[in-house]
Length: 99
Image 1 (cartoon, rainbow, N blue to C red):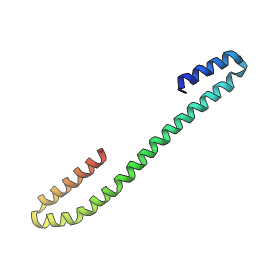
Image 2 (tube, rainbow, N blue to C red):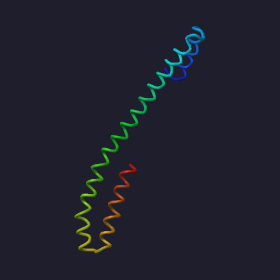
Image 3 (tube, one colour):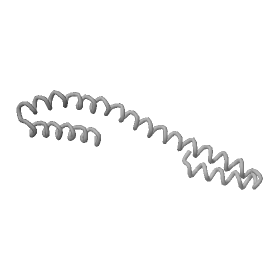
Image 4 (cartoon, rainbow, N blue to C red):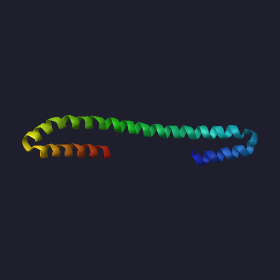
């Protein structure tokens, strides 16, 4: 049942039962809406956590590879080689973060 249908059902129940039951009807409706919002929030949080856990090993791995790559680039190409390795590491990590 959609939120609109639930709201219509609550309004119809209020008309039938009268204003003395209004607080209970409003509380019931709000509990259902809050429950749906909590489910949506938990789903989004779980997706964010999953994405974060997938990115972390790649970032750490790229930083671990950066050490020997910088040593090799520094000994063969000098500061320019080290700068190229740093730029490549940054680009890889940016690409993964945007994905």
